[in-house]
Length: 182
Figure 1 (tube, rainbow, N blue to C red):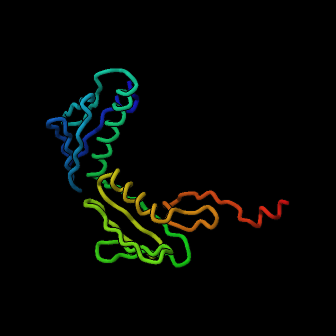
Figure 2: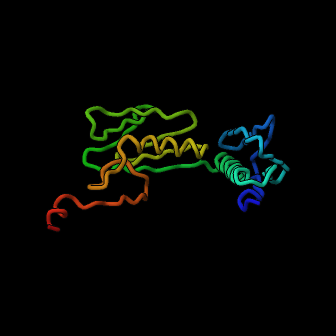
Figure 3: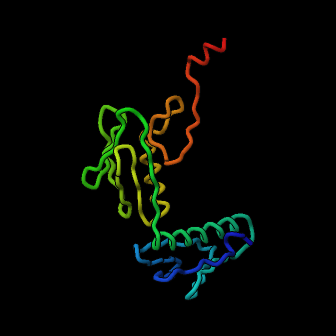
């Protein structure tokens, strides 16, 4: 059996988990999340915990078993604690600011980039060089962070661009190092 998949998921106080027509719905203090479970995976809900099991024992089913256990666990964590991702902006003249609910990014292009977040995701710009993304859906928070990072990914020579907080940017030597080696 899957080591991840066989572990029961405890239901935290204040959270309700229900299932109808192959769809798992998790309601909690921060909101509600739902997901349609793969037909080869079965979910058993008791008042204290959720158990995920599979019908077959081949590789694909073992992978789905662990996946769906992790996804349901992430839904329970999302409606209780929520998720956040922090981005840092590095570069002279690069900055971010909020314009109403939209994020305006100045990243060295000839025009500013206006980014409107999808429903369920909140954006903040506590300083001009940092962006905080929060929400209850882990996948959506990560997707929005990746989208904002894709506007100007960090480059390896000076490290300029949008990066995740704590992300290590592998640096390269410039042309001067190449000519000195001759």
